[in-house]
Length: 441
Image (cartoon, rainbow, N blue to C red; front, side, top):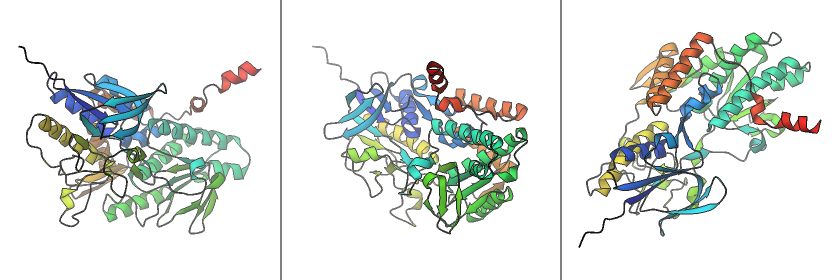
């Protein structure tokens, strides 16, 4: 009697960001034919390389080149565009709402949690109405058009109070995302002012508000001080150890008594684990992250893996100083964890030994606008042009797929030769407005 062929192991990856996409890429390369099927579920049909969002917002990179289409690169996986609403490991099922609105349940044998993080907001009056995030490509495009349109409006008004409000730009949060977004946008706006004879650089009011006593805690304190000095040299105002009390109707009030009006308030003050995890039976820590072992397995659950911002992974490089230390939410950890996760998941399917995730933080690089940057890598500190080149070199190397690397490099080359694009395409925020106006006339 012929042996019955066993069914492939059903692997479901929830989340198509860094961990989700890199894990799926690794699995489709390493799995044998018929060994397992891989399904990736994400609300977006693409992965966003978030470190490039500030440059996309500033027009240095074409926004489409910052995203990687999942269906194109994961050609051996099944990609489902939908939002996960519940995970029940007891029944080994994932519930999701698909793009067309219907609810669907997917069963699995092995689960990979890669839900990532969302913006961490605070109960500040006016934040929900006035704040703009910088975590998606849509937000980056919106911010670019919004900032440039403020320049257009400011050049057209004769009211000095209205002009002051339009030309006040606030970034709240002094981490990498906040610093790079502030610096890139100010650089873009300063460049654009050459086409606005009515406006001068000193008319603009660029403000950074950070609740702690320093910016970019990932780099040395000395480099953080240097960064603030460089921003202030460009006329930007930096408020450290300061909090926003309210921003209702665009009226910003800081806890040191400073008040001003702004039409642009960008929020980059940290992230938190995806709240969908609260609708699961996975073990969570006090910060809402999934508890994991150093092998990236979920504590106490066989066949469940987790990595990235939504996971409390032990940081073995810091256990001597802090036995309870966990890895910080960064792209550096997410990409490296996904490689170990792939190796361990495949090893578990084949009954082989798995290894712990260990990565000692090697440093960070940050761009401060065109030809300006800071870097602190392996204890080597760089400033200015050299750091800016290190920043671009590192991130283009980490950008997934040769196709996207080439397109980003070409964007940079064209920008170097032809200069920045400084046109606002505000119509995309309300594309039917003109048609509706025409139909009513």
